[in-house]
Length: 144
Image (tube, rainbow, N blue to C red):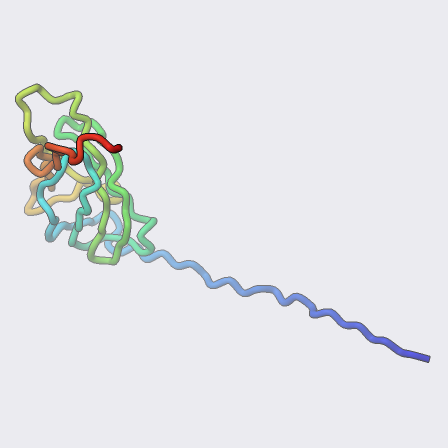
């Protein structure tokens, strides 16, 4: 008589690491620096905001860009964050609202629901045509 025993591995419950959110200085964002202070109207400018009151993980931070007339331009896409800095990509500006002679526009930021200030003044970033790349010529003119 042949005795065969088969066994299968009993699945063990997987232990999930708890996710922890660090909320430092909740509602008390304070700016120490922003770089750069101006850039392309086409957006995609990597903005580095230094200060306090930011959150970990980076997805818990929200940076909004506002026109000076309090109209929302859009979100600055957060790429990375620490307790003291946020890196985000600025949206393109809507130039259809510009006068034909306008070459720049300042906007201000709001971080985690609070307008970021430096010495009591709103933080501004300036979109400018002077920092916007322009294609002047394409060579060769035709492909064969």
